[in-house]
Length: 321
Image (cartoon, rainbow, N blue to C red):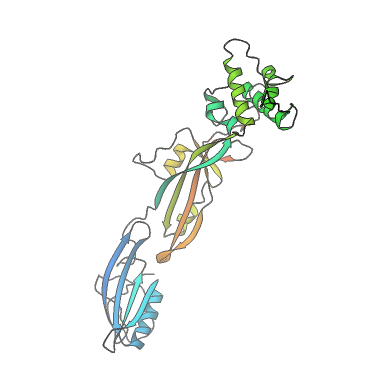
């Protein structure tokens, strides 16, 4: 509701209806004088305008009631020092014309978060894959060798290799995991010198057995916060929640331009449901995130539109099956 009705004095104690006027005109209760103090504009929370009213305590209580009806979100009533008059300061969540004086674009943030990820799935070991499981860059080990290391490590965890340590061989558990029947050397048949893959596989198995089975995986979280003046803005923030977006879809929907946010064009993004809270100045704040998704498939997610997920087709079978 517009806090600035037409400028004229009123006798009634009923708050006047909304309307337009200029900067220095106020609707005043009987015995009250007032003035427009100023306007503050904020890109995050919008505009606010402040008015000051002077009069008796009883007259200002009527004015306070009117201001509350016009939408004032912050009011202070105090006696003016050294006199019998009182002052009421009221702050309204709009500009002097009862509307927003600027477009509220909200904020964009590109955060980086970290998680512990399985060492066997790192891009260095396994290579980089697209969302369909197609290899984009090769890793240190082919898939079948990485699987052999994983199988050998699981066998070692289950105690299938001897772990009896001796003075002459302090790491007999690793030795047996590599050289026993069914051990890594038999699984990784890299018989051509210099045995590159076999040696890499042994190094990786040693890392796993000695406790280095994870690595710090960094990924982006694109955070969107906006101050909504209309319910339709809140409703729009629910579009595509819990779904997988492509980078181009994200940048188009959020109107990202200027090159400040360099998002990986090959990444996929999982959109969270919005968090809606009442913000200052009687507006609503909406926040939601897009989390960079390293590996997604059609059993856990649905695409927002153009994202193609692994196993989205019943004929999309893993290689070698």
